[in-house]
Image (tube, rainbow, N blue to C red; front, side, top):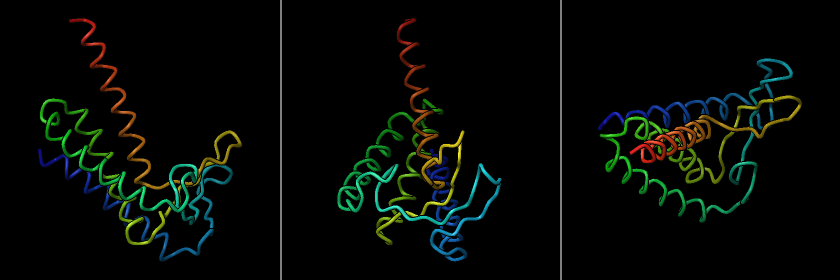
Length: 154
């Protein structure tokens, strides 16, 4: 069961380390091309949620994040031993939630830096924690769909 938390800790560590590099080595809004026209490292700050919604609503984020963390820990302990894919999904979500929570708590903003242009669409800049959250949610959807299919076949 400890591996749930090890995965979350790896996500948090990687997230905070990469954000630290961006904050200490780059100026705000500085952009480094990795693959010109497609992928850039861009130093950006976000005081809201995905796509910049709910700007400066820190109290809301604190409350929601604490509730989400408690809920995830509960679900990990309830289902983690028996449903490994669900445990992986929840571990990624936990790590991502805590990674961005640390930024909000100590800096009142989230450091974002992964900047992609996909088919001429400049996708909102994000970070490792955001990536872990998205992958975790996708895995959770897959687990839920597989479970529903299993119930239908019983």
